[in-house]
Length: 97
Image (cartoon, rainbow, N blue to C red):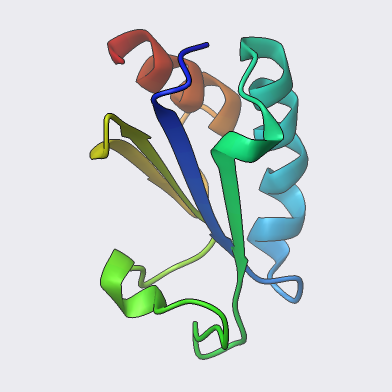
């Protein structure tokens, strides 16, 4: 997988959608060869705030939000749960990249 690819995940440990979708996310990342240093995991509180990152700059309203970038430009986004499943949606984004 290209090193120009970066994936930002905004998630909350308290969120049921995050708990359900994050294992699928990491499974696909492993399968397609995206390394850990290409993934930025931002944990937020129930108000979608993080003390370490300005989440509002990402325009995240619901979580988990998985945002895919290539060469610094957003290529796709999955929010909460994707129709057809997170794994399939992620693979479709990678095919377009």
